[in-house]
Image (cartoon, rainbow over all chains, first blue to last red; front, side, top):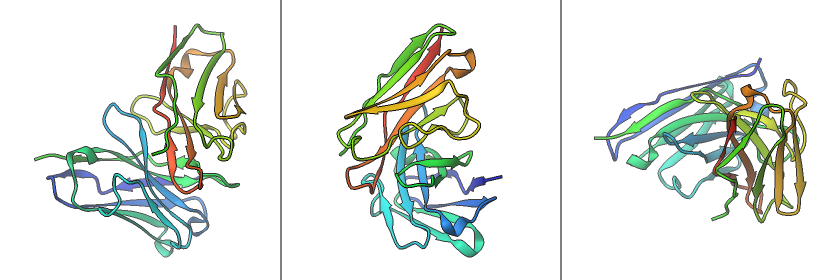
Length: 120
Length: 108
């Protein structure tokens, strides 16, 4: 059974940093591209970043480019999101999501999410 | 930046057919995906690659594509289908993920 479990969320002050983790199990992690998707309270879904299976290709939404860094450790079956210079508008539930198979940009499995609150 | 457009809300009675549309200029070139999200839960994939249904998703969920519009159809809507539905695709280069604004399906 595919499982994605996020951790690392919490309350942080504006300008602060936080590192999110996503532990993957139930599939060959090193074979899949992975993503972070966020959802602000009461709002819709927003794609944040993606990383290819071997970390060769990394992409970011304009809203986080230059502040967030995605990475992965295939030996530990883990995905990370380093978030710096956090702003109030970064407050959201952050989900890690696996790329679906067979081409296209879509997400077939999601974690339960971790809440990040940016507030003074 | 690239956008996908969905209606904010759709309402249907139980047993009727719900159709939720999503429009975007790159949809003829990029696959569309649909997610169901219930309050307090993570999204669940219900349609992938425009019209494919993942295992475990009821047959009443179907997807179609025509030009710059994709459509999620739920036939014989049940009360348990009440949720937010999001379409998702990629920009024309296939690099960046993009979500529609979401549609709240209300079962009357």
